[in-house]
Image (cartoon, rainbow, N blue to C red):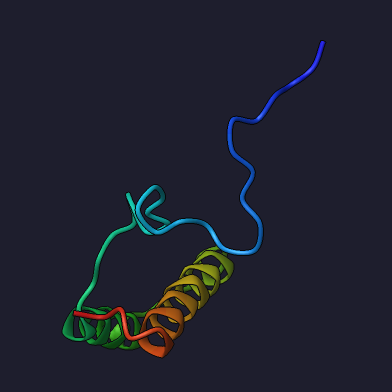
Length: 73
């Protein structure tokens, strides 16, 4: 039993057939700023700290990626 590929793609995916950002939420720079300001002013205790830290890190990584690739609205 085997698998046959109809088309083999090397190096870069064709732009017309794949949208790597499909399904991702799109945030504007103002929306990111609002989220970060709200997170900064909130009080978190105990068990919440690790979860909030992880969430904030994910948001920050998403922001930096979108900003460096000029994908922000």
